[in-house]
Each structure stands twice: as structure tokens, then as C-alpha cells.
Image 1 (cartoon, rainbow, N blue to C red):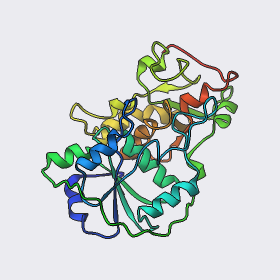
Image 2 (tube, rainbow, N blue to C red; image 1 turned 135 degrees about the vertical axis):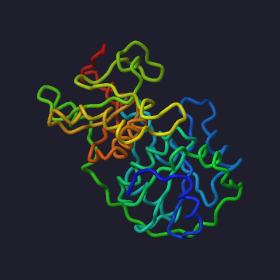
Image 3 (cartoon, rainbow, N blue to C red; image 1 turned 120 degrees about the vertical axis):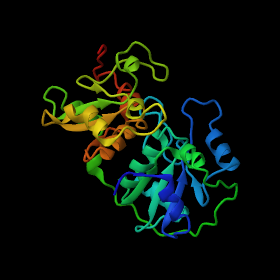
Image 4 (cartoon, one colour; image 1 turned 120 degrees about the horizontal axis):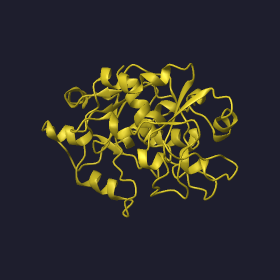
Length: 281
């Protein structure tokens, strides 16, 4: 199954009871943390539930210890999915405003707890509206389900696992942040600038064209193919474990699956003074 679904395909599935649609709109750094939910209330794809990055896709932040968006416990996230009506055989479609970062985090996280059939709406709600499909302000009637987490622990790494291999690398670390942040020239969100030693920079925004659509698979393969030439496992990270999922999604769209996530990412890495920091390109 492709990780992306086009609006015209989703439009044919709106009345399929096995399809669960989830709105993930959220703006990082926005003073109004509920802005995504306000957009949802103003209009969303029919039958969509709303999932908040910080309230639902993240555990509480522990200052000086966790990232800015730490993963919740699998069982906690599974209980939330039960409230959304998600079952083991559900086909879940997630979308955001079209940037794909929030949807990619939800896509990765759903698969992490064992939901097998998950897709991201290509182009998000912008492409849905652009194709003149309907929106609604009505919240769906949801029948709670039974769903137990089956965590896929092999698709993520801890800070300790990343640090342990720095001298003799077994992972190719891939940073999804902008080049300026990677190089340590600017840092608008976290207390220290730079990157994890040995990482390469692949800004997530470069996965898309000027219209906000993902590049064709062959172009994405060109963008990431060099990462597979050194027999190292590819591990993605970013600032807080959100936009790194965009790169994972892009690589899977290009037919380059089985990469991993360091969910703590840069904002967790810098909480320990003993962890080394690199700057420059």
C-alpha cells in the first residue's frame, strides 16, 4: 500500500465504515496552541476526528529530560485510538493543512502502535478543497472500539543507542531540519545549536515541489539514494521527532522503506551535557 492517498480516492471511501479519517492540523510555534482545532471546527473532511500534536500525539514534556514532543506510552495512545473507533482492521487516513509534517507524525505513530493500514492524504485539506470536495462543521458520531497496542519497537531508537555508536557508526543519521539549523548558524527553538556528529542534512521541505506536493518517487530516490550506499541503517531525527517523519514518509513513497526514527531528536539530545555536538556543514 502506498503511504499516500489522493483526494479522489479518499472521496470514494467516505461511507466505508472501516475508514477512519483524522485531522491533524497544528502549527508549530504558534502562540495559539488550539489554532488547529479551531480550523477543524470551522470546517473539516466529513467524518474526520481531530488529533492534536501536543495533547494527543505527545506525552507531557519533562524540562531538561525529554524532547519538545515526546512519544506517549503505547497503551495510552491505544486508549485514545479506541475513543476514535480505530480497530485492528481499520483503514486510517490522516491529513493536515498540506505541509504533511503533522500527518506524517500521526502516520508513523499509528504504525508504531500496530495499525497496519495507514495513509496520508496527499496535499492535505488544501488539495481536498482544491478538488472541490465537501467540508463539514459537524462532528462525527463515534462508536468506541477495542484496540490494543502492538508496539513496533524495531522502528525507533533511544538517545543511548544513538550515542553508543558514534565512534563506530552503525547508523546513518539524517537530520530533517533546515541547513542553517543543522550547521548551527541559527536555532529558533532549542537551547543549543548544531547537530549530532555524523549526521547529514536532508531538509524535509525539499521533499515537496512548489505546489506542496511530494516529488515523484524517482526524484525522491535520487534525493536519498546516497544514504543507502554505506551499509549503515538509516535513522531520521529533527528538532522534536515531528518533521523527521516527513523524511520517513518521503523515502517510503520512493520505495525506500525500513528506516528508523530517533524520536527524541535534537531537543532531547542537548539535555545531556555529555552528548557531543557538531556544527558546520
